[in-house]
Amino acid sequence: MPTAVPSADSTPVDPTADQVDFLVIGAGIAGLSTAIRLARTGSVLVVTKEELAESNTAYAQGGIAVAMGGEEDVALHLEDTLAAGDGLVEAEAARILVEQGPKRVEELLEWGTAFDREDGELMRTREGAHSRSRILHANGDATGKEIAVSLLRHVRALPNVRLLEWTTGIDLLVSSDEGQYCVTGATLLDGEGGILTIHARATLIASGGAGQVYSDTTNPAVATGDGIAMAWRAGAAVSDMEFYQFHPTAFSAPNAPRFLMSEALRGEGAYLINAKGERFMQRYHRLLELAPRDVVARAITREGMDGPVYLDLRHVTQDLHARFPGISGFLARYHLDLNRDLIPVRPAAHYLMGGILTDVNGRTTLRGLYAAGEAACTGVHGANRLASNSLLEGLVFGALAAEAMIDCRGCSTLPFHSTKPEASASFAEGRTPDEQIERWVQDLRSNMWKYAGLLRDAQGLEMMQRILEALAATMPRGLSRPAIEARNLHAVAAMIVNSALARRESRGAHYRHDFPQHESVSRHSVLQQDDLSFHESLRKSRVQ
Image (tube, rainbow, N blue to C red; front, top):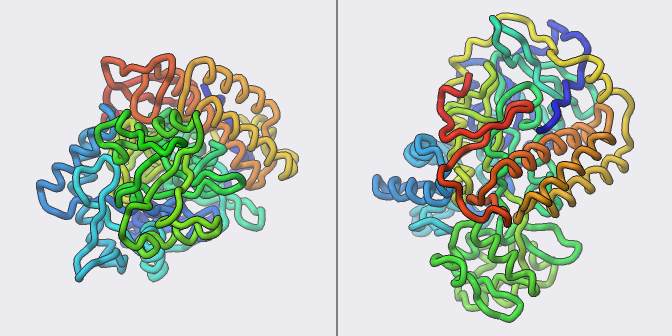
């Protein structure tokens, strides 16, 4: 199991430090949409690790899946979500997602989000595992950026919200209240290297995923699993960490970033072809190129053993430059054209289905702590997220988390650090040089890709456990952003590896060579400190 790394700050808490009603860690779609609602009833501090526009939300290309076509469309969206999740979706969470989705998207429209239209009507496209066209997009392939811009514009106009950029979370503040642990804020590292102590009645983690735990990822550099690691160190339960979705089609060229080749390309008719120039998806799934992501990713990996795999849109007659301006601009740097050339692709780590265990209202197993978006696990995605459900998830469950946070009465005692000071001091003392940390992180990421990536088995996962033990002995030290991120990546890697080793089956995004079949009963993994268990349902009674 992962070994708990105590809080980095072992000094007494200053009761005169900054106090707010609500602390929001993360400024993507979940964090900002929650902050908008919280601002109606109290003061809100939103912190983000870089500038406000830098989040997984801003990188979302394909769009936002929402059933705007009435009851039948909602029912089909639910069916598609359940099917993609491979038997592990929490039905209540999925129902809430698809039923409340249209209302939340209408709010986005009211806040000024400009989705693409044709003849005045919202344009809808189709992506993998969707039974009909229901994906809204903006500026072709810049949906996330448009949503982020509109939310920021709305948030900046709210007097009760304070936005703090270039601020990294260190650890949560934990208090014991009437025999129950309670989160009362967080310690943060500001852009100048100073330590901030923020007390809050309720704290939301909406810090996104952890794609940087793998060497090949579509995620931005900020996605280092900070919020998940902070919550776990504080004693919160996490769930389904073994389920990491690998996007099938990231750009694959030497010395090039794993830029996302949106699933919408296949929605517009792109073929997948192997090194022999043959389409191959008919050998893997009846939906061909629009099969669920886990199926397509494994198919590309297998076909790629004999040479490169390509996206082929040469037969598509529409103007792909206008439809996908961002992707077209990126490919132009490599002298490639969507209408003219084969585009080399391979899978890359893209989205974490697991995260901090919550109910549908964002409540975690610790009082005062809430989570939403990719950092949270409601069970809504099961073992494999349906394409473009993630932005909708942030909207819907962010709104519900806000309602629960407003009702939170907080904790009656001042916070204290419940971890051992000597262990805390060990992490905080000294400062590992950044170049040494970079080599350490590269070692972790490359080995995670090799031993705990798309295709797994016990031998590889056990090897990764030994590597993590060795890396723990040389853990970077110091209260610098690189050191904090390294510590968090190590914690998240251990959660993924231990959960994957314990799950002796293949399901959704988790595939094991040595256990290729489903178990007879679908169960969620739940990890809390050093205790890993499995449960058939993530019931509401499991939180707070």
